[in-house]
Image 1 (spheres, rainbow, N blue to C red):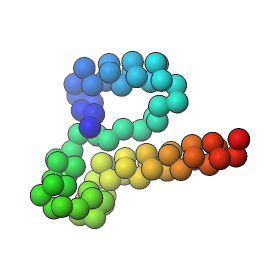
Image 2: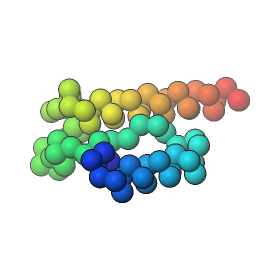
Image 3: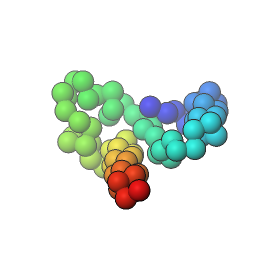
Image 4: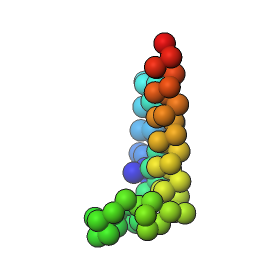
Length: 74
C-alpha cells in the first residue's frame, strides 16, 4: 500500500518508476478496507467494492491483462 501523504512513499514510487520502466503505473492506496481483508477473510472488492483500493485493484488487473496481451502477440 502506498500512503500518498508520506514523502518516503512518494519518493520510493518515483524512484521505482524511473528504475523499472515496465513497472505498472497503478498502486494500492493506503486503506483500512485493505487491512480489513483479514477480518472479513475476503477480497476487498467483495465488501468495499467502491473503495479507492478496490478501484486500484481493478485498474492494476486491467494493466496486467493488457501487458499479457502485448507479450503474447510478440
